Amino acid sequence: MDAVTAPHWFRTPNAAGPPGQEPPPMGPAFRSGFVCLVGRPNVGKSTLLNRLVGRTVSITAPKPQTTRNRILGIKHGPGYQAVFVDTPGIHDARDPLNRRLVRYALAALEDADVVLVMVEPLRESQRVPQAADARVLAHVSGVTAPRLLLINKIDLASEGEILHSIARFNEAGRFDEIVPLSAKSGRGVARLEALIPGYLSPGPPFFEPDWHTDQSEQMFIAEMIRQELFR
Image (cartoon, rainbow, N blue to C red; front, side, top):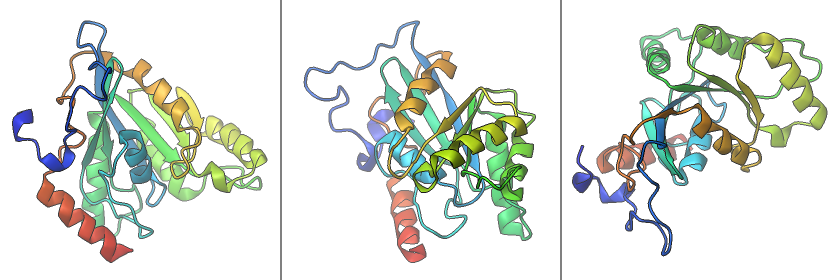
């Protein structure tokens, strides 16, 4: 798609950024890639995506399976572009709609350059991940792309529970990094943002610097209406 036709809803008025800030270099050192967010329903994937991109591109609501499409959020950083793919929650689907949503999520894993696996903290009495998280871990166990485990909602957990969760999840799967964070408050997100560029490959950006999502304005409006109905 040509940037000239990008919906104004998602375009930055000044692609060069604030006064005095130059656009990121597009030379040989530039890095880019697709970063897939996966996890069980209601684990906070869309909230994290919006925080990483710096604006609302994916709707959020307490209702499980709010995300029903593949949503792209584009983050432009110094010397890199990360295209985040928000996916429906992976779960034990029993009806045609939910089976299709799970297929969307699993298909996104196949093309990912980096996979962010999101879980919630365990209670100190829990020795293994709960079944919903274990299902997600099983699906990503064969992925060859770098995998970062994100322990979300640490603002609702004690320090002991966070440390316990790191140890238990480290035993449950192979991960290149384990990052405790809170998508809601932003705690720990800066560390994740610092890690991601190192896992991207050298290459040109996929989108122009004034793009933040690939959604049309019509789709975004429809999604916002659906968000309010859920809430």
